[in-house]
Image (cartoon, rainbow, N blue to C red; front, top):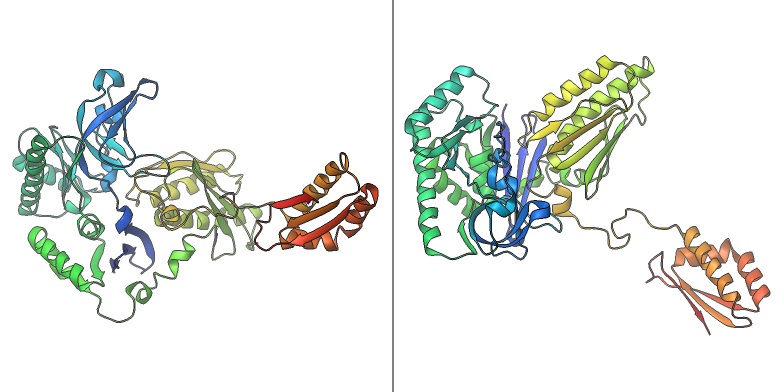
Length: 493
């Protein structure tokens, strides 16, 4: 069995779920109309500020925030990982940013990473246009082949065909989807990409910065181009209108895929029909339980994501080392799955349970590498440390699932915890004693959250009475449901 792509269309958003061969949710993409991804868009921009200390520049491309252009993105090789391809990157030259760009200069850039958090979009001055089988690289005489095409004879065949058809002064990346395709497939893809490039070139000469020159396909069409491969046999969509657009697009550019496109006509919502709706809340949870009874804890912070492995209820049947190793191995596969499903990016630290045997650590690392090699995003993984940690980075192009679907808690301000009612009550008692140093024989109105007020009434009644007696106070405690648990008010009357 092969996997499926399930697409749910609504007026507000598009959701694309990738199911593996076991019908398990493997990847989830969400694009909302109000903040659609800009990755792949090409702009004519203007440099507004040079930052020599950061070796970067800010570029106005017509968005609310200026885009960020690093010196390496002016000089280095292409960022192939945007399109899920795994290739070597060329070694960048090292020239200072101030020798490359000037403030006010117009530049030709492409978005390589969406705006994330408070950061603006990241752009590169090297343009890459993806097709179904190839990625066009204008101005580069180079042909690269995806590492995921393992057969050497097939790699050579594809490279020779592209070399035969490609125009002068243009390079191409041969994508994983091209494995087994015909000469006509490659030729048609090259013609399609060259037409896109010609249109961009013509438009570039007619407009002034900042201006959008080319917009990448929407999420639905990108699903056809980037996801519908050998291991995915069917795409099912629940919108008749978008279904017809898909068919028109596929018949024009990829006619061999027409038979794989299907319309979901059942009244049952498509994500419920395929069990996807129930899986989404699980992908947002902090704790993930393993079948053995162990569990992992996933914490996302601004700088990195930490993953902690625990044995939980699993006690094993043999030695302690065997129990730990089995828990780690089970957790490792789940972690690899969760990283892809949640689209975790940047630095990821995984704290496996300490193992004494070096051979167990090596086996864990090797299997984890194999699992992450299936990922479309570029990953760099370091060996298991003596502390049982695996440190890795994963290319972050778009926001994680949690940041797309959630926002910081307004109650705890994103901390994930609040002061206990006991702590707040003791702060109030300190405040009352402090007032007693300067004032005597007065009436005090104390307003607090009901949890705090009840604690003072029931657990610290004797303390309140002692403060009243010592300072001649009359303390009135008022519970107010509208108060934050950490907030209180002490008023002297």
